[in-house]
Length: 465
Image 1 (tube, rainbow, N blue to C red):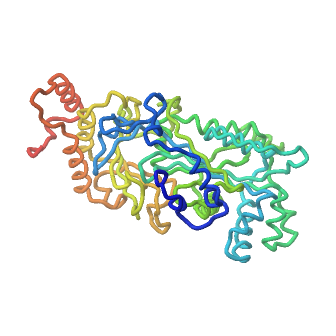
Image 2: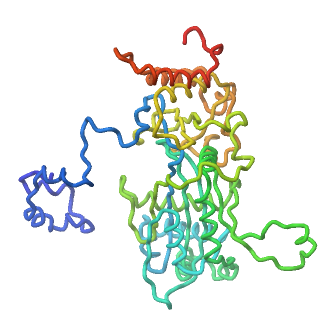
Image 3: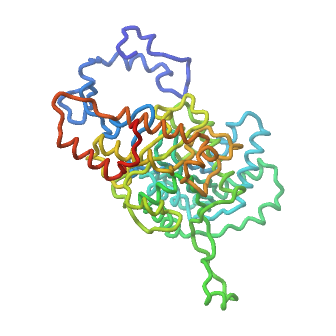
């Protein structure tokens, strides 16, 4: 379009007053530009990215990718934030996005019903900005006058999962509303005034909630990986600290509430409905891959890798099998329902995660050796990857109690036969086998074979292999 000499080619859709290029100013802008295709990529600019067929891939692990499986660095995790923040200034805009007043009324009722359960009161709006700054590094400071700082009511939830491209995600979702916006929602929901008298949220100091965010971000690579496999969800809530014997004896005294991050196993938890509400509004305003920029939505993300500790604070549910604690690589099987039209990388059902951080020195022999190890192992890890998974499916539920299965259990829990899993692993091994060359590097080959023999017992090999 930019190289066309016909100005009418610049407009690709109908008039849209919200798009700058569709208001009519695009023509003088294009006429003033003299585009030279060779000037678009300046070879003298060190920051310019030049794509050539001979360039090495940016991710060194892509060399192990095949239709049967791929390799991921377990240190990399996406910190994602999805927030719905309703204020007096944007509540009308939010409700106008629904088809009719009845839908807007039902939505307002859903918001109020969700905020009435496990809600907290923040000191001011700036707390939401500080939380987003910590979680994704996105500084979203909006100036506000001191006399225009109403109380903020909010509910927070943290979710861990593996998405359809095998990337780990830790998502912070929240629903927040200012005090004056809540008054408008009550009017639109046509609730009686009596509803207001029962609303008494506990106050949360800013340093408490920021400390809880730091604890969540400070989890080790192994802890985050296990949490993503099990699709764990946590609610941030103000609760009494766990009682000690001394506190029980003095139960007559009032104990202050503290901010806690509790595992949320309740299927009827308000966090489930809250996350559904936030994501419903997000999807309603998202167009293709373009993130929405409405004032009532907070959307940001960041990939974290460096600085994450590999090991920290073992707990019983974070440990892998006892005989695999020393392993730096974990093979995971995960199918995805309704994977049509998903991004590239969704079709693979196997992923080998590198948990020891040693990704720059990986060779095909080391990957093949580890796949051989899992080929003859009678257990395998499994998860449910995020996608359009039906809620009626038994595999949809979060907080799975088991993510490590015996081969005889895979048909029941992973919906695949043990023969098919073995075939997938073996086919992946065949695609990674190095080709025979005239002058092989015998030193590298010998080193790789030694790695294979260290993890695979020769007596376990079948005659076919």
